[in-house]
Length: 81
Image (cartoon, rainbow, N blue to C red; front, side, top):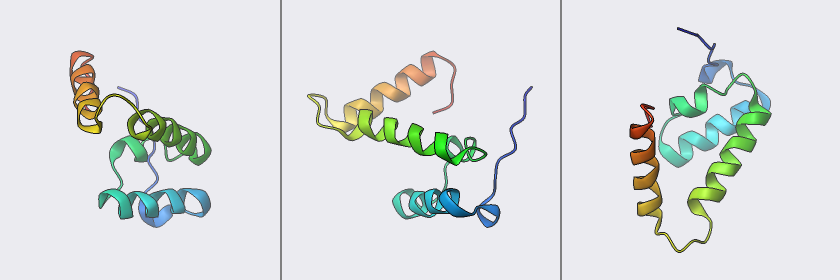
């Protein structure tokens, strides 16, 4: 199994520290899906921007339905969401 070094909160500096701080303010913690991308903060920021665009932008689908669909697709793909 592969292993990716994840940067811990106390190690984070610069952009990554801001991303982690924002994550804690938003969700109460830094979720693993965020932490796994911590070695490359610029890609993490871009990925989070895409996620927010898909999940929070104006849409005919309610946010709760979008989240439910994400969980169902993740489960069907054998991916922990």
